[in-house]
Length: 532
Image 1 (tube, helix red, strand yellow):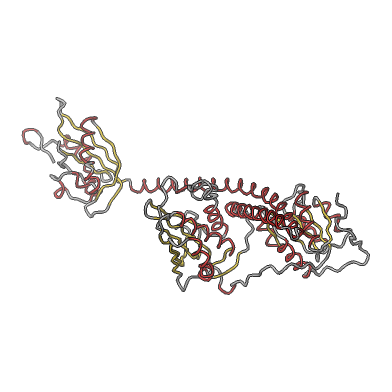
Image 2 (cartoon, helix red, strand yellow):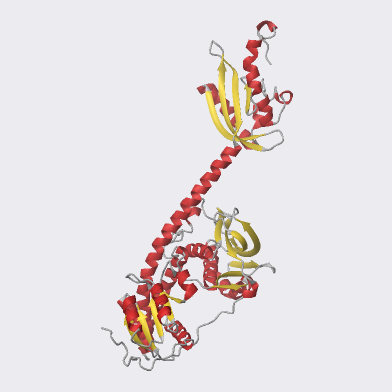
């Protein structure tokens, strides 16, 4: 404590400011001389920084700064600013005596005598680590909310576009299948039809990726071991990435089974491996690893909880720039040259992970590669699925009611069923369909889910179940927010579908039907009865 002029002890009144400063314990308040050496030290400084007055007085205040800040001469720059402007305010990391760091709010005031000459500095430091962490947490929460809103908006947009596009593809692919059957031996016609089918299949893949991103895609989850699926896929993956890239998979033997859509899992795996390959133009290694984790809801941005299998796909490629990384899951966003990518690969991965009840994260550093981490829900091993495959074509015959408000889609669906040997009646809305089933003994109803009017396809299926309990209903859709609900009650088939799938579904459903044929019910004698 400094002495008063002449060496006499200060009066009680003169000591009040010093006693006040000494009593403050939440702030480090001390003085520096002109060169930055500590000359006073209050109890709050000891509380915040961990030093006693005897340990620190006479030491340079730069010892409170990190080695990086000292190397950048931050202490000298702060004093220079205070000397020039009279005051300097700053925030940054500071070190306590025990070496721990805290985030400090700092004010340095220049002290001058009555003649204006600098005599030293008054320094106030406050530990605001908790406030900073709260601000960071709030910012992250806001970023997560904004990200979720953006993804939801993109999902609604892309899902709607995919629905309309799937109806167009249904017409193209359906008629191309019919042309293929009628083409005969003409090689030119066969090539043209094959090109049309290939383009339609590519379009169906794109819409499938869009629908997966928007989480409006029809999923059929099954339980399987991730290692088995990767092993079965390994040869195809290895041939796809080329000789310059090596694929290394380390699947832990105790990895839990997962419950996801197997087809979507394979598509996501292909998308991720091919993306990794493209990031390694000069070759490298793609590494697949697994682990079991239990999440409590705080470990990921998606706040998911429960038991998950973590699948990491890491590459040794060029990495992704920090300003680009937040955009990689956006549909149609790509850094690849024109014609080298649709921009839907990672968006499909994002949608697949979230629709499966998991999530996906990505970490990358320029020049050091990228790691994509999938969190996939654990499946019950007792439910390991034995997946069905469509049987060969072969119509069993019968009468089918096709309910579709899009005339072109209805026409091609009816034509495909007729080609399979069924008699078909078309209805453009639910009311017409309900009237028809009261007059005709149908063997099957095929209805779109989304239809104009007061009753959609799901409501129609429920009404048919109530009126005709034995009449099977096959729902079809290119996109619907009601898919999950519909799939829980009825068989749902995704547009665009081919003859083989339609034949398999129709034959199985009719064979399983227990509806008796009424003796007095008028049955259709002609294909396309009541059709324009």
